[in-house]
Length: 455
Image 1 (tube, rainbow, N blue to C red):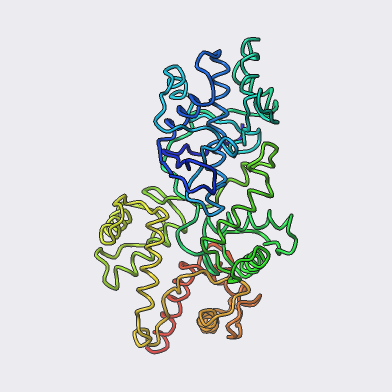
Image 2: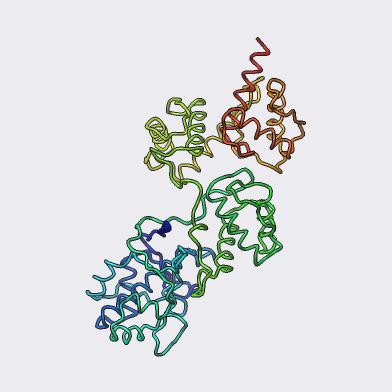
């Protein structure tokens, strides 16, 4: 059976008390309380229990779809859903809640409907079935189906198709906005980059002027920048090639649109599309390059005056790493979790960049410079690429397996081949791009050979 990816249930939901553009109040309420309120406003407590349950599944899933697709937030609003029945579902502040509905919601509020083979909450459109009709669920129609003896799942199948599943007991957690909290640009890497690469490629199917990003790998390279620039041009955004908050949410809006995620007939998001290559939070037990990068940043910060000690870079998130992260968080007034989440990562990267930018050129002398803070990859042109080529070319004088490359400042095929060969030679993952660990190893070898020459 394929792995199931759960979409988490939010602890709260923010409701706009009016039509989207109305100057109305926003209220933030616990998600389960919201479902109880809507159910008590939309349906009748004396309906058969199967009908009540089918409606509550639909109400819950509809709200989750609005949150998952960031339908309103991607349009510049600061709420998740409205209480206008012309757009969404009824919510009446401070209304009485029916006891039997409250009991059912407590059981079902973290269950939702998906189309088989997809992970996104289905847009479970519904209407009352008397004064208004639609292609989704008929609220009054569920009553007659329940009286015929249909189960809640069978009722939902009548309206949404046989190919639906109900996800049970999804985890409840605080859900933050999807924007990573910092701009994405050339050299950035991680889940957020890969998500945007995949979404831009899907949008490009409908807007072919946007160039396809070949082999999305989570590295923000020149082809990703070109796609971002074309997207910005098409949708009247400043053409910077940088993904700021406005560009991020415009991409989200059109991705939702081309996949019809906020419609009953939706392309859906597959399990494969929903998977991300890197851990979203690093903690004790995490192993791999992301952990090693955190350790590298922490050690550089510690060396230049951090409030914690140097420790080995092992790529294993151990107690020493956790202690250093906790000390870092304490110093910068972050929640002291000893884990690296998005907020801690953004601050860690910022402090690292501030640290290396404050180092005078005279500090290095004939030693290799520290990692510039972004991934160097094919197609880039910069002074840092020129520095990289200088180091590789010097090392090649001592290692015949390494090709001698020209120092041009352009990361072309020759440079990529030299990087790959260096990575093979020194037991690194062969990627062809230069992150912190490859840069650090190149720097270490360069320094050793310079010292050897001088001595």
